[in-house]
Structure formats: C-alpha cells, structure tokens
Length: 164
Image (cartoon, helix red, strand yellow):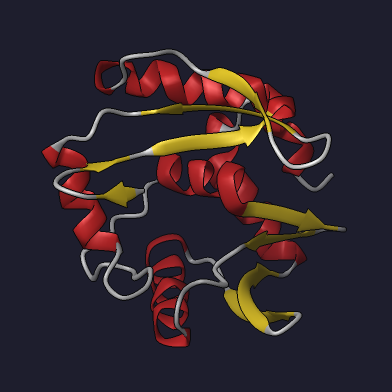
C-alpha cells in the first residue's frame, strides 16, 4: 500500500502466480481501472500486477495497518479466508510445517497474532528465527489443522504451498 491523499493497493506477484493475481483482480475489480499486466523486473524476473485506484476505503486500511511500521490492529478479525489469502501471499512450507512470514512485525504484534490464532482456531504457532528476524511457524500437527481451516480457499495454482 502507498498513501498520499488517499491510499491505493498494488498487487504484484511473479508471472508464475498469474492465476492468483487474476483472482485478486476479479475480487477487487470495482476498485481498479486497468486489468493486470506483466512487466519485466530485475534480471530475468517477469512480474504480473495491477493497482487499485486511490480511494478513502484504502486510506482507512492503510492507517489501520501502517504507523511508523506495519502493525496488527487490535480489532483484527482473522477469518478462514483472511488466513488463506495471507498464506497464499506470505506463507511458505518447509517439510511438514507451515510458516507465516511476519518478519516486518514487532515481537509484541507477533505474540498478539499467536494469541489470536490460539484463541480463535486453537492453533499453536510460535516465533521461529529466520536469519535475523522472526516469523510464525506451526508444528506438523498444527500445520495440518491450519491447512484444514484454509484449504477450501486455496486456489489450485497455490496448492504447492500445502505440505503433503
């Protein structure tokens, strides 16, 4: 997200995730003037992206999630769909475990997310060091539970993120 007078949302992924960008475009099309386009990134990278219009609705979200750095609002409602989109955007797997990349959040916000996941979904996540920063990790059992919660929303082209 970027904000001047009003904020806009930029949806950018690799061309390999074209189906996912197209799905997001379909769901956000009322806020968009032009469809997604491919572009040449650094080196041989080909990206695929679109931008929403700058609108007050996005400005409201911008100020809910961005202060001096990204924050987790205290009234965050993590639905199964929200978790699925978050995982498709910023999640990963390693062997049988799922990760949510939360490296840009403070440890306090990460602990708050851990509490939400525990209280709402009975999911046990913990902070896991990734190089110099921390992200959230589910053990094997909770990864399976997490996937059961979000599976119905995971697009076919994003199934590669699901541990087998």
